[in-house]
Image (cartoon, rainbow, N blue to C red; front, side, top):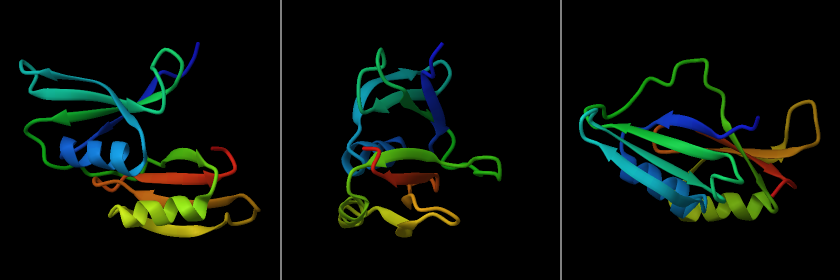
Length: 128
């Protein structure tokens, strides 16, 4: 077995694709509209689905936003230079919600950014 994908429901697919592809550097791997169900699925990631875990963005055409609830945690991305990554994200209009620094009770350097729907994305230095 292997992990295939994580799914997020997004309110504005174009904004979400811009964030994950332009700001975080993922590639749009595939996208399909389902008119009968009034939704679109877009799969993004850093490599082919056959070899990498990817992110499924689900856009329900009649829903502009979602309550995030208190069960969701975050998506984690490994980066080589967390300070440069956060600056690049900020320069592209991304929102850094926790500046880079050591995690509480540890030494791993992390930061958090937020996507257009408010989902948290953790950046972890040294795992890029």
